[in-house]
Image 1 (cartoon, rainbow, N blue to C red):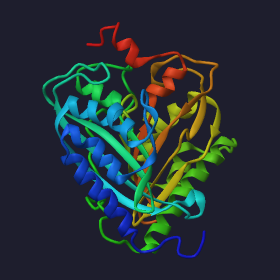
Image 2: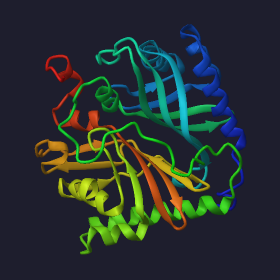
Image 3: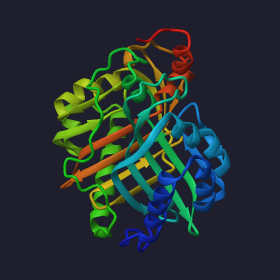
Length: 342
């Protein structure tokens, strides 16, 4: 990494995103495109979970994503749990990204993506990465848990999951909003912890024999918290994580390919990455109760981590499961139009 990779701050980039959120969250429907135009580049590349995929330009993002969502979830509030910034470890610090994570809360008053409204409060899990260049947002990865919203609306998009379903809280330590500068050495430690965990996964892929729990203990605290997407769920402690997600996941796929990440950042005790896609996998059957397939399929993922000491203590995961299963021939949103879920 180049000198100054872990610097104090990125305060200017953080302020751009904070100002963008303030303007966007307070905008009337007719003003959303203007806000996006003011804060984003003309050729903004926006990546969102299926069915949105890639969208180019502020006007299209406003028309296709923000205005329909805001019409469905009235009186929307952004409730952030994590906010951080950092130089991108994937390009040796040549780009700066700002990430935030939390929920978009609103009253579900109109249909969205065919999901019927409830008239009640709902929470849409989200995580976003913003690339800042010359004072503008030039790229954004906006990942959101649509199946989680479906479940709040009383639908069952997938078979019963192996872990717990819930509206997920932020960090146990309640210190995830890094609006102020953080010590550079802490961000460096977090990136090392994340890389150590990823390297352990690669060791597993290469077939070394070791118990799953012992492997996990090298990278994770014993009382780790893994906040997975709807369809998989959340789990607590190494023993239950191995039993309720990591073990079943490893047993359910073959030909696992790591495609890498577009951005990986860390600041203070927090860090994370996203890819497009991160993984390509072939299902051998059983994952999420669904059958085997001979078709390799891509997983688009955001991972956000909290470090405690030299190990990882919490992990929030966003996986585009609708896109993954669409590649396998299961169109969850399309099926909702013809098959009763309730």
